[in-house]
Length: 504
Image 1 (cartoon, helix red, strand yellow):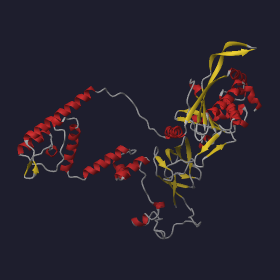
Image 2 (cartoon, helix red, strand yellow):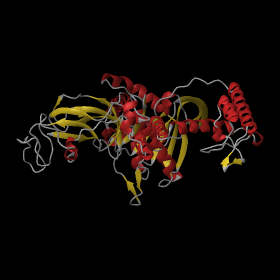
Image 3 (cartoon, one colour):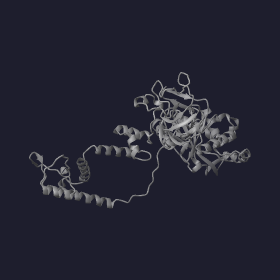
């Protein structure tokens, strides 16, 4: 029995995915849950498993194609599969089943009407074109399969428009086609001609002229039907030799002007283009939605982290003995989890549909990670309940998976707060965009030595201290400036004195 397999919803709210690579080919035997394709969608690359044991009959999508969820991507042939009422499906003795479906490869061809009655066995060719191109083809009344016959590779919008234009032109007679092209060229040239140079172009079916006039027009490459005239002869438009020469001179002047402008234009500068799709497009869509939905405000401050630098230095060797790479980030994550517990108004999301603010009693910290394909945000769950080294190990593992593009969608969901470490590449201040549906995101600046006034035993001295900058962007619909300041102050408290984290 033939079984069509549609692209499933491989992530919450995903509408389409780009098919990166087929793992099977027609004729391959597959088992249930065996990966058959790699699909990129919503910041992740996922494996699409086979739903059955069987043989690959047909691949209906090409690598690189953007496929909507619900479109058939592969057809399997399954032996002994049962139909919807639970009875086993076996080939009948006749050439066709009761519904007219052909079941024997050697049977006589069945009528076209019967073949279309069961979509499960309809053989159709998947055209390599994205959804936007298919939509344009429908709007222009173009059969996209006809383009595939004459255009190798992936079909683009320009292919569709060119084919539509060509089809429209072929419907006219050869004389009308030539005249239309001539009119189009002359109309484009006439746009910059002054009114004294016969700027307007006529568009007639017939024109009366003496043989000499027609001869001169042919030599100049002018279609008489395009030459403006108010004169008439025997009720038809009449063009004189003088009018043709004036028109030809106007066209020549315009062509010379265009050539001169092109000669003075700056030479083309080298550039290259690459597709805006996949993860980069998903990031762009999410950032645009967040920026234009939530009114962003950024609260910025500095914190003396000299004690944090010393604490990390003391613990670094101990962490290495456990094969753990200890950076400053796990300290900040633990500090943020503690500050969120003290300021629950920050650990919220806005449910606009139900007009409710959702306060969360769990503390899942997302870590914005730069990859070659864009920004991914792995989530470390329950940071408040985990030890420092455990947070460090899990953060390193997931950020590496993000860079290797092996992070699953589930590992990027459920965050309540996000940290972006711009200091890792030398940044100091920033205005990060909120990772919705969260309500706040904290950007960490580079730790730098700066002069600070230090008070000790009632005396003030200026000393070099390690200073980190904090930039907290928050959703002003649910948080106020005071909420942001209180939360940032709490984070600073733990970073100034990391020993306080031992009490958490």
